[in-house]
Length: 330
Image (cartoon, rainbow, N blue to C red):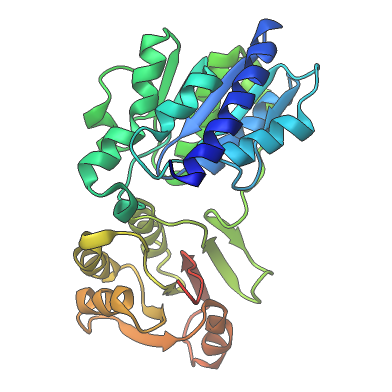
């Protein structure tokens, strides 16, 4: 047996015992999964629920068996009423494996995109894996909540409590509010709690001071759908010099060249300047899609964009979209 699988099996056994005790005293479990939006929805939901309940939520990227076990081991108390768990997956069957010990009362699918495609092996396998929670929740007669603005989710899920919106921020906030209602908050409580929403760092976070200029920081864990969504937002900011900084997307397997070419085509009309990070197959095919229709600059490291932008003679105030960040040795 693979050592990682053996390790996770041990952790999941311990997690199952902890969850059994938690639920025996009336605790509710919310499990959030999907290709994107998991962390944003988790953080926004925490902001809402903590106004009424004692909650415990996984933090940062603690969405593995090890991360969940650490959260329960060091932070669980007898006062906790609601457990909010973000769950990631890189292979078929992994989410089902999580669901057995976690026993979610509410399962959430935040979106499905071609992320980590090389690990799953195919788009069909990825879609099957990301919808495993729906099959578990339906069988357990729990509540399934899903992002109705995601066309792939709509195609794969026949019945759910849907949430949607016109942009990423609205979609994620509506997701959090839909879950809060399912947990037990009434509309008035949810409305009052909305003022406690906080921005989620590096997930479409608009900042004016972190980089010395106005930046839309979307550098954490991008995918093809969020890339296009972010480009659409950038494209509407026509009063500014619209600058895209990106190293492209990783783990797309055999579809990488095609996806990057398509993303390059989407950049046209939505950015005035493109700064590509690194010279590799990802950026090569982005440039191919752009086809000379947008000015391109090349840098070695993502943060080099600050020096480059400051040197450019721009006719309008710049706004920079940081779309994904990739380690230099990836």
